[in-house]
Amino acid sequence: MPDLLAAHRHTTNNRAEVEASALCGCCYCMQTFPPSEIVAFTGLDMDNLDDPDAADAETALCPRCGSESVIGDRSGYKINAQFLGNMNEAWFQRTIIHKPRPKP
Image (cartoon, rainbow, N blue to C red; front, top):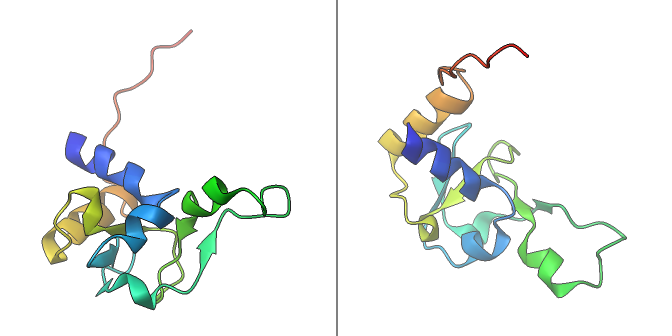
């Protein structure tokens, strides 16, 4: 489970990493695609439009389903059906089990 938690951090603010990848995948629809197929990113607005670092921190949108759940192989994770299935199960099927928080 720790690997999935660490991998999830690569699904946001990932434009530079995704564009440097050879293969990307979506943790929601579990499709794979080259980064050149990604045509939309979120996170840039009028307040940071002129900030070059802000563009690199944008979040990729899946070209198949539009989800903000894209991860590229530049993240260090192997983008394949098993990995994407595990990520989907953990994040979208709500099977990650959290320890109960102590009551205040």
